Every structure is written in C-alpha cells, then in structure tokens.
Length: 614
Image (cartoon, rainbow, N blue to C red):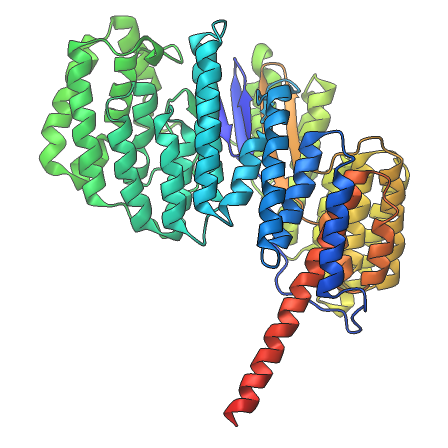
C-alpha cells in the first residue's frame, strides 16, 4: 500500500504506514514599518539590489540554486521593468531545462520508507510565470510536455511501469502549478489543471479539486465533470479516485496511492455530481462482468472487479440516502460482482469490511498488554498505543511504556513525537509552563526550537510572561551553540532571531549574527525546505509528518529583521559566504523595501484624495 501526502510519499511493504500533516505556524499578518526608515530602503535602491543579485547569480554553478535567485528577482522586477523581468524568466527556464536534463525528477529515498519529491525546476519556473502571465505559462507547459513525449518515444529501455510513474509525476506537477493561481484566479487554475487530465489520475487530482472548491466550488464542480469525462473509461485504478469528491469523502479508500483529503468546511456536495458518478460506476461494474479489468487494476492483493465492488459497498448507504432510485441497481451490481469473485477473494473482501459491531474500546494499559503479547508487531503496536493515548492519560506514565520498545532509535523518535504533540496541545490551551516542561523533553533540536518559538510567541502579548519568552529564546541560542556547524543549529538561531525581533532589536541582531556565523561554517547549507520532517521508523512500520516553520529560514528571518533595522539586516546579509543564500536574503530585503515604497505611495494617494474632497 502506498500513501501520498502533499509534497512527500511514504512507501512501506508491511504492517502500517501512518501519514499526517503537522501543525503549521500561522503566517504573520500586517507589516510593521521601522519608525525611522533607512535612506537605503527606497524603490530605486531596492531595484538596484535586485539587479546586483542577478549579476551575482551568473557565478552560481548549480542551476537549481540559480533558478531560485532568478525567479525571485524576476518577480520583484515585473511591476516596474516587465521586459527585463521577462528576459530573466526566460533565462531561468533555460537553466531549469538544463537542470532537469542533468538530474531528472525521480524521488529520492530518505530513511526507511520516505520518498521525497525532487522538484522539476521547469515546473518551478512555470508556476512563477503563471502568477504573472498565464498564456506564457501555458506555452512553456506545452513545450515541456512535447519534449517529455519525444524523450519517452525515443527511450526504448523505459518500462511501461516506469513511464506510468513518470506520467503520474507529470500530472502532479501540472496540478501543483495550477495551485499557484489560487486563490486569485480559480477559473485560470482550473483551466491550467485541465492539462493534467491527459495523464493518469491519482490522489493529487482530488486534492486539487477540494483546494479549488475551498475558493470557488462552482468552478471545482465544473472541473470535476471534465475529470469524469476524461477518466470515465480509464482503468479502475484511475477512475475510482473520482469517487470521493461528489460525496465529500475525506479519504481515498483502497487505492494504489491512498491517504486522506482535506475537505473544505463549507463544502456542499452537488447531487447532480453524485448521480453522474454513480451512473458511471454502475456502467463500469457491468462492463467488468463482461470484460476483465486492466491487469494493472489488480493491486494491493485484490482484483480490479473487487476494487469496484469495494467502492460500490462504500457508497451503498449514501446511494440509499441520496439517490434512492439507483439503490436497487447498485445492490444488484454489488451482488453480481461479489458472485464473480473466487471464494478466497470473497473472504478477503468480507474481511476488508468494517465490523458491524465495533470492538469494545481498550484502555491504554490493555493495549500495552496486548502489544507485549505480539512479538513480531510489538514495537508497532506499542507505538500506536502511545500515539493514540488521549490527553487524560498521564504523560510520564504513557512515555514510560516506550521503554518496552526494543528498537532504540524508534523509541527515541517516538518519545520526541509524543512530547511534541503534548507540548503543542498545551500551547493551544494556554498552559505555557506545562508546554515548556514538555518541550524540554524533545531531543531533536529543530522540533524543540519550533516549540520554544511557539511558546515564546504565545508569551509575548502578556507582560507577565514576556520574561518567559526571553528565557525560552535564550535556551534555543544556548542549545544551538552546542552544534554550531549544522543547518539545524542555524535554523534554530534564525528562529530565535525572528522572535527576538518582535521585542528586542539589539538581541535579535546579535542572534542573527550568530546564525550567519553558523551558516558560514556549513558547506553548501540548504535552507530551501521550509517544512521540518518528523519520523518514527521501526521494523516494517513508519510514521511521518511535516510542519511549516516560516521563521526558520534566512529569507524570512532577514525580512522580519528589516522591519526594525534595515541597515543592520543588509549589512549582515552581505556577510553570508554562500553566494546563492546571500542573493536570496538580499532579495528578501529588497522585497521589503519595494512593499514599503508601494504602501507609502498608497498612503500619499489617499491623503491627496482626501484633500481634494475637502
């Protein structure tokens, strides 16, 4: 069974795969301008800074890093020097094509079962261009698709399975590019996403439709009709991905790539789409009885007819409730498909059904005792019991059960995960002292720094707890000092500087200087990923999660610092040894100045308008 979640994939062959998206730090709102603006922070100087970084990017040997600089620069130039920005976007696309030719886009494996996507820089450029010029982005997309089709045609060694995997990645990349147009242009996003319908359907398709529905459900519903027309006759392993959206279901069911969906809170299923899908499903069920499904539909140890039967069974109560005139035909199709299965397949199908009478819930102690009796699955079952323990269970008592886990690495990862979750819950409920105590037990520096910064953020609005925020941030700095030559330590220091900038400018600058010093001691430091990954990896099982840390990368930290001391931030950015990182942080400062200039112009126009009306 394989599971897909946003930017990364988990593949494990045995017991269990658990996949979650962790809590995301809220975006900063509003812009707090420095009370004494720097004379260096004007529009002309900002545009000059942008051009300087473009010139510097020519010395970068890595095309992916060069593309990142060029795209930021082009986007900043667009409102002021559009012709120049177009040239930069074009050059970035050329660099992206070279990068793809050299590296490809096959996911890389990290750890036991985590596959991390390798960005296709061509689509990174297309996403950036799409925000500015959709027609141009469409032409670039057509160029990429044509080039890939020609490459697939000439590559005789590529297997059918490898081609399908590549096509699935292409569909996902096209849908991800369409995200770039949301929420500003939902119809444009749907039009762009239509390019993906030429490729195999997967979990990202329904993820996109729900994301689109959150902004504009009417447009999403129309897009669903397009998708159903495209995949209605495709193999069941593609077609059945379309079963969730019409009914607002939050998970895929038993599919080649499976997992959960985020259904918008206000999502209202369209009865017409329910009927359209069920009618198509019934037709496919009758076809499956006449012509065996595609060989590729035999996945997860079950035949294609069985998977159609699974979806019919899953939807049966919803059909009886919402489409009673189709209930009889649905029941008949279900019975016919069941009869077509061999006895072992029927037995497997029956075992896959939810129990009519749910088993009595077990206490935490009972689950631990049961786990200890299962030698081959003990570590997995203990991990599951610990992670499922409710807030009423004493934290120390639950954590003590981890001592029974034989794998030392899995035990340490589990304890970090457990204490991380408990600390997050304590922050949300305002129990900041308890959150601090729990966070101190998290050994992984990235995770502990994130928790401390969240506790500090919650402490700042209250005078009586501001000193606690300072203590926590000082603890982050002290901990990072023990590992000065790592990206993890640098991230922790940037997080502390980011938070210090809210209330102590001098301390923020000092910590930022330490962060820069830490970065300069690491060769080829990579801060491109704003998500921090958590994992528990044991024998034949794995849990993976990510959470967004917007203050943990240099660009955001420097941008925040610019609000209170632009000159100091600019000076520090110039001391970064890594050319690409220096360029990106300087562009972040230029962006701040351009935003500030635009805001000042807006205020002046409003004042002039007000005077004119008097």
